[in-house]
Length: 232
Image 1 (cartoon, rainbow, N blue to C red):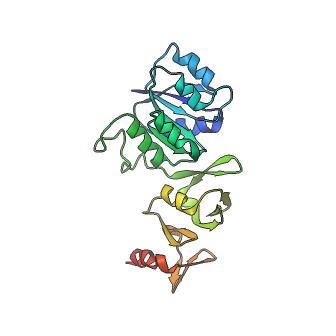
Image 2 (cartoon, rainbow, N blue to C red):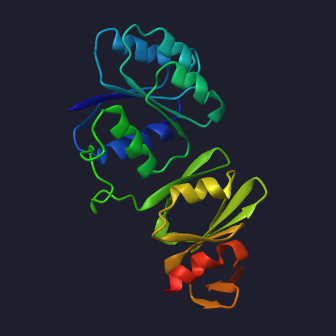
Image 3 (cartoon, rainbow, N blue to C red):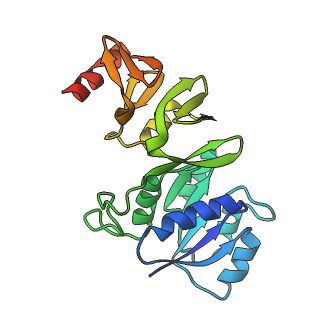
């Protein structure tokens, strides 16, 4: 049994992490901690195997908290701030997850944390019962859970991406390349430097254009081979 602790001042972060852990075998939540002082109090009389740690918290910051621990368990940092990654690895953290992160990325970090060989991970992504069918997207300081089946296409817009859904759209502050990494290549394909489309929602292909519902999406020269392979 892997005993873990969540340390984060945002309730939604606790819900996301616990929801992911509930999809895995042998993961036991020991306590929800909403600041590092609360965690220190718990750890003074209890031992755990793994910590999911936010960095920007009141009272005591995440890395300052780590520096106080004489015997650190495995630590997976979960944060919205990528600029602290180097410092984290200097403190011997196991992995550094940038919010919002997908279940696949989360699973990779957990497998790494518990030192299980790739040939025998805590749970395999190929297991149909554990494949994530959703993704968390961050917009206006909120995390939205979106079903992958609802995503029609994604359009880059400067430092943002517009994620078009069946009945809505969400403006996300992220690069299109980062979003592509979070999506399965089996279900999504980049067809232009500014567009990713869901394969299942492609209505038709004609020349250098793709039609999804009532929207016409251009096919870039660099990505034409991707589309040709899709047809084959």
